[in-house]
Image (tube, rainbow, N blue to C red; front, side, top):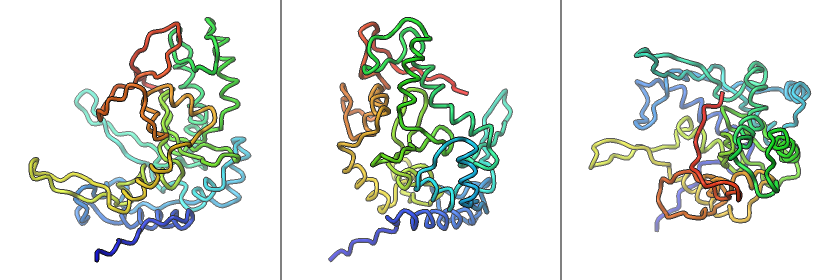
Amino acid sequence: MHKKQTLLIPEDYTEFLYWVKERTETFWSKSKSSSNTEAYPCPQWVEGAKWIGMTDEQIDATEAKYDIKFMPEHRAFLRILHTIDRKKVSEYEEERETQTYQTSFFYNWLKDEDEIVSRLNWPYRTVFEDVSPPQGVWLKSWGTRPSSVEEKERIFADWYAKAPKLLPLTSHRFLVSRDDLADRPVLSVYGSDTIVYGWDLRLYLLNEITDHLDLYVPVFDEEDQCYYAEYRDELTEVFDLAKQKLPGKDIPYWKELMLYWSSGWSSFGLKHPGDNGETVQPIMPTYVPDDQEPAQKRFRGFE
């Protein structure tokens, strides 16, 4: 009889965070030349990296400094993980020359003040940039769209003040922060195109840093004669179980915004209107106010 493989990914949240710490630091201790991971060898910039946790006193001081409140699971994340002892190094080509820039792997609440201040305002600023144009995003619950930008912002600001607060983790990923919610997911916010990136911090970390957790296995493709990455069985099982729990989930206020664009429906285990089963589809509005025609989402370079 086939014996079911023991799930290696801890379900207990605190135990999971320590597991993440140990597994990533073990992965980062392998140089690219010595790594046995064919699909995702340890990138050179992160070799030897270590997590830098915060003390409870530092977390309390950070809440006071930014006038925010970390939820218990966020405090545990900051205490055990928080950030690493270096910046992520990325490259891009400009005028035939390779340029590099550095970003935080996860925001350092003790040092990244300018980035954090900017990101705390990111959801408001970038979503309203999509709302303010004459034919911009307009939610059904907001009623008749006014003509003036000032009145639009008054309506939007009132909505935003009531919505659960979002606290930055890295890049444009934010943890929903309100203590009366059954679920406090991590959202990926790029203007009005907002999706759930993990229904809790555990699922989010498994999704965000899969390669650093060494949770891919190399699978050789005979036709293309190359390796591609595939989730380990343990990770597939976790994600499949999470999908079964999606029906009925809600995020006050934010859910309506996420369902405005077709990209957000899968966050709640739903198929958006017009879903034809294709893997890649354009991001289209699923609610169109009477005064405008449907149009595909056009991304803009938020800064």
